[in-house]
Image 1 (spheres, rainbow, N blue to C red):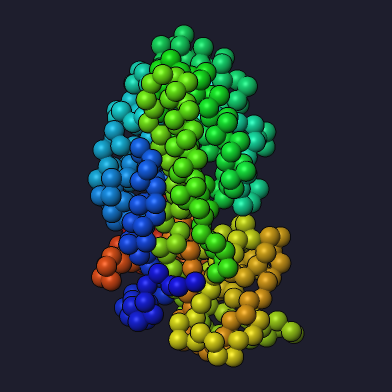
Image 2 (image 1 turned 180 degrees about the vertical axis):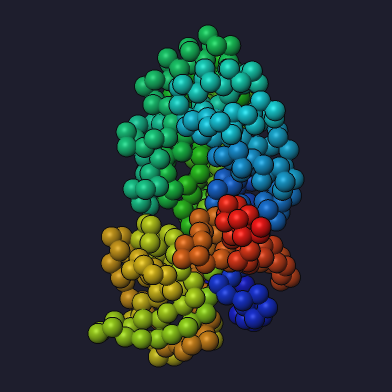
Length: 411
C-alpha cells in the first residue's frame, strides 16, 4: 500500500511540526469525489473529518454536506457552506439545535416519529426528509451497524405509512427519504437497501423530490484488499433511480452521502518510535501516538496498515505497535476483543518514523485529551505543497475552559 505522501515530505513535516501528526492529501480526496460524480448530489458526512480547511476544500469541489449536531452546522458555515447546502440528520432535537433551527433554515432529516411535532413547533420550514430504518443493517463491526431492531437510527419501515399521514396532518411535506444501514456494507446488503428504498419512495411519492442512499462505501484497509467497485455501485443506484422515476412519473434527485470513502485513504497518522522491548515472546514497538489520536483499533479492533519509511524490508519480524497511554487497550495491532495481533514489520530503533494508514476518517474527529495529551497538529497537502491546517493544542488551550480553577487562581 503506497503512502499518500512521499517519504521525503513525511520526514520534512515531522521535523517541522513534530509528532504525532496527521497528514492529509487533498488530491486523493479529489479522486474519490470524482468516483461519485454520476450521482446528482454528493453530500459529505462531516463527522468523518471536520477540519475547517478540509471542509472548505471539499466545498470548493461542489460537494454539499451532512451534519449531525448544531456545532457541525456552525463549523460548516465557518468553512464557507451556506445554510441551503447543509442537511441536519438526527434521531432527536436537543435544546441547542432547536434554538438554532429557529434562526436558520437548514433542511432536516428526521430519524424519529416524534420529531415531526417538535419540528412543527419550531415554526421554521415545512419540507422535511425522513430517515428510514429498513429493518436490517450491515457493517464492518456491530457498532457501526445502523439498521435493524438493535439500531437506534431511523423510523421503523413498518411505521412509514402512519408517519407520512401524521406529517400531512401537521402540514409538513416529506420531500426526501434517506437510508443508511452501516459502514462497510457489501453489494448483497445494498441490493436489499435498493429494494427497500424503492418501496419507501412509492409510499412517499406525493411530494418526493430527493432520495439519499446513505454512505458506508468501503475502503481497502489491508494491502491485499481490492478497492471497492464504485462503478458497479453507481450503476446499480442509477438503475434504481431510473426504475423509481418510471414508477413515480417524475424526476428524482439521487444523493450519496460518503464520509469515510472520501477522506480515509488521504490520511496518515505519523508518529515516532520511542522504544523497543520484548515481553516474553512478544516484541513491542512503542510510539508516541495512542488511541487518543486513533481510537478505531481499540474501539472496533479495526485494522490499519502500518509502514516505516526507510525500513521497507530489513529484519522483518512479528511485532506489536503500542502507544504511551496508561491503558492495555492502547495497541494499534489488535483484533476484535482486544487480542494483540503481531504484524510482520522491519526492525526499528528510537527516532524512526512510523506511518499508520487510512487515518483521514474517524481519526482526528474522534481524538481526545485522554491522559491530558494535546490534540495533534494537522497538515493538508495539495499538489505536493503542504500547509498547517491545525496547530498542535497547547496546555493553555486544553485548560482554558476549566473556568473555576483559573478564575480562583487569578485573584
